[in-house]
Image 1 (cartoon, rainbow, N blue to C red):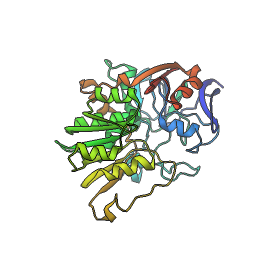
Image 2: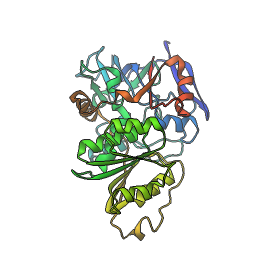
Image 3: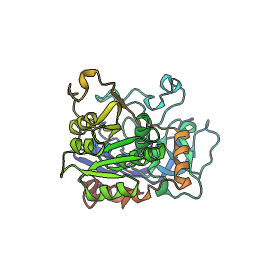
Image 4: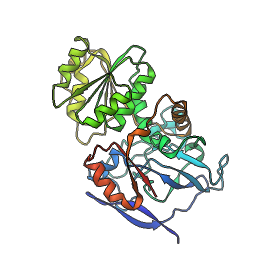
Length: 357
């Protein structure tokens, strides 16, 4: 049996490179040879044991690659074709898909979380930090890459671009809105870029890492708030003349940022939650106006599927957004443990890493 290199979860604190069998291809599947992938903040939650997955699982959910082999029932694609697949891989025919929420297509993980939706790569099935990944329901999930786009130009599409943009979309941002983004990691930066594309005219970003604040400016954030130098809620209310923001996007997943996002909303504003929370949330009665402030709290899971990927690649191809600068470090798959050490400790100004098998 042929084997491949794969980064697998061993136990909390240990993701290591091992060899495991190359997957068999079912009728509706496609085997992708991974040419570029990356590490996500969710992978760090897995590494730390904050999000439970099975031991021996291949991690990773952001694949860019080439079709190595097609299932017998797959049509419309060719072996050797460059493709991406979203981090979320809906079937296209489930109740969740047919009611318009394909990202929730799935039973969730059997290891404790019951709300993981359609996130399968690196969660309930082997992921893509490997030489090969098996893509389920290939005709729903594989999206061809335009010839003039490089791997790194589309690397953000499978997850953080889709997630960040969805945060802006779910917030219902309108032309002329004022929006604040709490946490300017890769997803928060993508949310800021999405808010700008949707018509927000004042975007405020909250973080403290200099490289992130600089990148936020580069992607169109108008005002940055360093939470180590000032109280973000007070400063945001000052910047909005006491009015508050139309939408607040929470992109970290902590009580502190969630609560601050709730506090700075104008009456009738929307809190769009993107963070992955590892503890229960508490909603303070005053920040929520005792339930009488017409405030809306929404959440989102990264939209997947080939049409979502096609649209995101169209945005990249248009030149209206350039996310390639988010790739700050590059590693070979053989260096996966070194890459995790850097990324999980947020050293050396890292935003995203590119991994090439």
